[in-house]
Image (tube, rainbow, N blue to C red):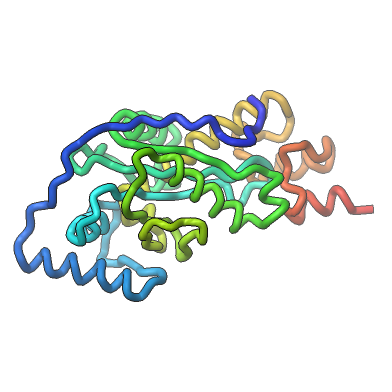
Length: 255
């Protein structure tokens, strides 16, 4: 399948009743204070309370402030030498959160596929990309943010609060948002987005590997593995390679 200029987005919208989580008055005050602090600081906030797997506590803090449609946003594919960068935005139903959500990097390929199916079946989601040309025109950080902005824009109806993986909020987002460092390890919404984005991109690279055999994209997803780097030297640069990345640039202009 050719690298898309804009990813065909599959959206599955569900309707569910949004209710405030039942908690004691003390828990309510703590949740409100936590989110108020994040909004006041306006920059990255680390959530390090000994969590080993993501949960819904960050989302609950947003619910306590009156937000109802909370989307987790994550991207995948900053490091590869080939292929687009892909982002996903996911709104989970708090009454029907798939069990086993975790940072996509911590899941086996088989488990990721299963969790991808569960999220698609039980949540609202959107997937978007920024092309290789956009990566080369801007830079990988800006391209990653473009993909995130597009994924959020594709959710209909839109979310009213965003949890962004990382320490920066993309400048094109106008919805209230919070950056969460290592968010896919703390927020189930961000973890779900990481799974959706990674599965989509991995499959794209499998498809592209059939058009450009020898680079091992079906296994390395475009990352600079030994096979990929050796194939670049032997087979050359494809239209799907990022020319602004040093290993690719050096081959194009080495002499």
